[in-house]
Length: 257
Image 1 (cartoon, one colour):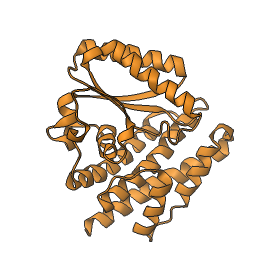
Image 2 (image 1 turned 120 degrees about the vertical axis):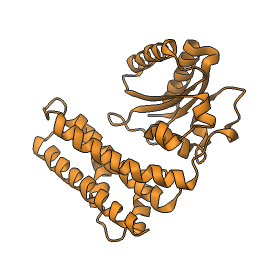
Image 3 (image 1 turned 45 degrees about the vertical axis):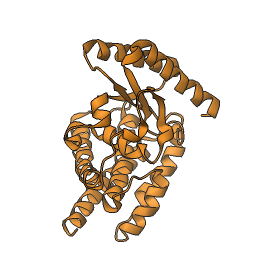
Image 4 (image 1 turned 180 degrees about the vertical axis):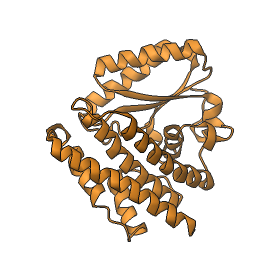
């Protein structure tokens, strides 16, 4: 996706959300790979939306806007919505803030350019930033969350020709995310691109084999070409085994820290 396309999409997001919410809109933060490492047929557009008042009318307005944005772009928009108070001074953030939301706030200090809209009354320097203890606690607990989510998905969703690639996409994303979370837990620092995460993971966990993650990068680049049932199942097995083994490996290491 070129810069012009991404700029048009960001402008459309801001305009449509502001038209729907007006002064109730506090901030819009890009929370995923868009646009820096966006890949056609693979990436979604993830947003953290901050509002002053989060009532039923606001939720219904947001649903209509997101449906319109998805219809315009033909891309899934994953959104998390929080209040201004939660954006600036959340109470019990590691409990009340959903994982993607907390990760977006962790990343925000490192990548302030991810804010594509900020109300004039908000000072970005005042936005909540998790301290090292919260970052480490969140990172470790969310590794377990992704393990549980992966198990639940694969034991409750019937594998069919229609959904096999979507299920695999979730599994590959989970393997990348838990690797990032493990590095964040070990370093106490926000992490960026997954290639950089992998390089750090190899240094921090020299006793673990990361060939599956390296292979994931190739699979993502060639995602549109992936169609062979046997190959997809083989990838499933390798990635699922990685998630199970790496999670246990990290938890065992955490006991010694």
